[in-house]
Image (cartoon, rainbow, N blue to C red; front, side, top):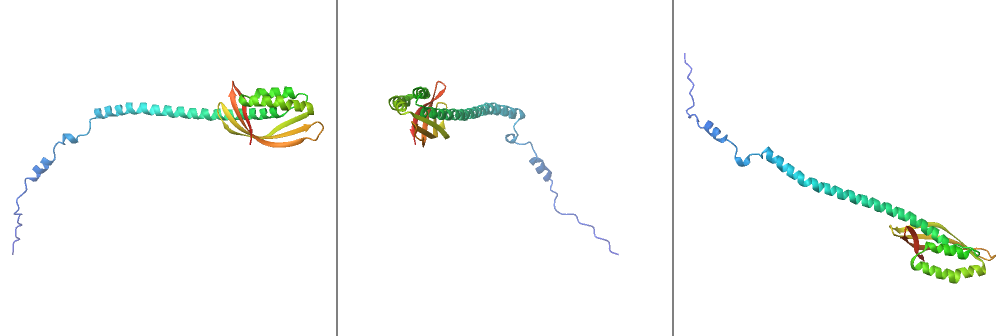
Length: 201
């Protein structure tokens, strides 16, 4: 009978230094790598907030002010356009309409719708030519504005394009009709839109 051979243990020496190395590697973290303290982070957050909030508030206020100004400008332009368009239309009809028996009164009343150099030119033309001719030849004129459009408009000045029809009757003759387009300039003076230019185009 053969007895089993006893097992041989390893001849290599036991490494007793491993735990020491492991213990040496596990130590306190370097102070330079430590996270920022909570108190310091809070102070930095507050400082950042105090810096950014006023800037954001200023930007928001500026944006709101600009939008309000823009809306008011658009609204003023729309109101000016509507008012000047009506003034140009009514003014053109008044300037070009009269009867022989009331021509002096009709055209003098129309002068109240004018301003500037155009007022002076219109006054000279009507007094020197139109009124005497209408009275002598029994001329009657009737004007209408079938179409009109605003070219530009601001709070104090506007330009309007008018399409004008005029019917002219001399004595007992058959009326003659004419059509024209006129660019009208208007200025707002003392709350009223007055015609300052009246140029055929």
